[in-house]
Length: 246
Image 1 (tube, rainbow, N blue to C red):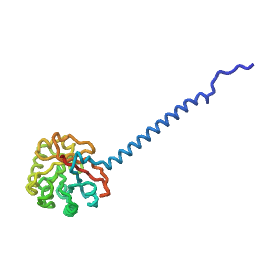
Image 2: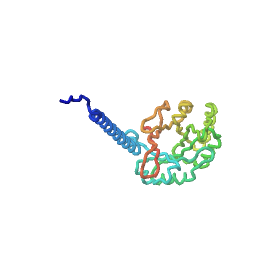
Image 3: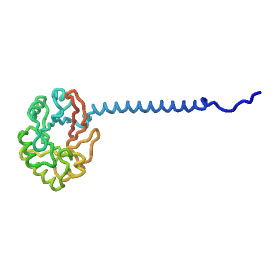
Image 4: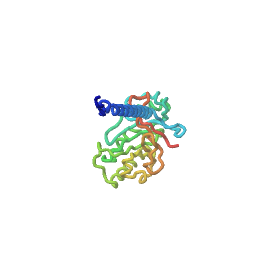
């Protein structure tokens, strides 16, 4: 009688490992699928999310010429009560369609304001001249908004705090003399971290942060860019949606 071998066949020894590996791959695949679905839902909600009207009754949009052609009827129907239009930037950039945009927004019953994108490295008086040349003295315009950020594109060497504040004060004085209204400072979190403008300059503050109300200004704000990626049928590009503190 032949002696029975106790050796296990190699194929039989490897089979459980293959089954375990296959199970792990299935679990991993399911996890990745769930993550993709969740990411897709999050992406879609980010593109369509609006703050609740019960919390912020007045809402609107901040536009620039980068947004291209806007359908003002659809924008109004989408819930925009007002529009801020980027009128000028630095010392020599202007949106020559600003007056046309003001008229179009008003024709839909929307209030309108002007934005100047401030350049930390450019002379304040030339920036003010650029703004007041384009934006008329109009009592029905909303208070002008001054967008201030740290930009390596236009200002790679940021000025010192004393120089920055002196130049900005000069700019504000000239713009406010022209518009006869105090400006709103639209400050980024990066700029506020470095210069603390909200504490140093007594003006209303406009803050920005997608979806979550920001606190970086250190004091109450009046306006908030709550979604910078909103998609509406009114434009072919993402819109910056803004709410007003009740």
